[in-house]
Image: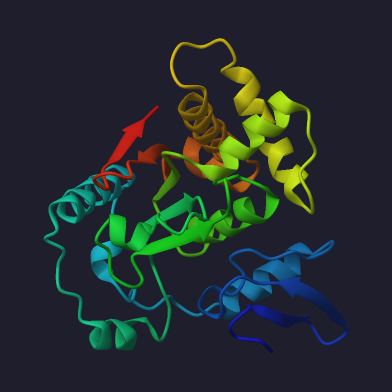
Length: 255
């Protein structure tokens, strides 16, 4: 069994063995894929479930609104250059048995954007997913489902940034009718809806497209069935958007 990846075999009864995909050894059964499981099998599995231990970072257990406030306050410290001192040794010890980040961040892969620094956070505080253009594709959505359903993360931030190279390349490819090499056309295709949505809008095309793409990605996550949409409707998680300003490190939240 691979503890790190969370793949395991689950035996139902003495005659039936089914393969299941389980996120996280500490939360076995939280997200499982099983075929035609009987009611009796599910009842038996429930009886065998072990009680959950205390979260490794109790301070990270909070409401979505409190999580957003904490992000904003951390970003203010980062802007002022007064980051807190982090005890990495103690943090490693606390996180050996698990994690419970208070926020998940879908961020652009740009090397100038580092969410852990931008929000003055410690290890185990942020569940960060990074990809050029902060695109909410199937893999990233699945990762965020894991954060919400298994790790109980109450907040998702889609973090874009100024002067995004992915958005700039997409705009150039669309306007010049050129095809980029390699796998880059898939990135252009993902960003095209945002670029087309802001055509003719007042202001800078690149920034408008960057903001619109973040909004669209946030909406994609909010409505992703069945897991994230249910969590949003039940107010267990909030999805917000923000843009990182390169000059001073400020993150402006927007709808």
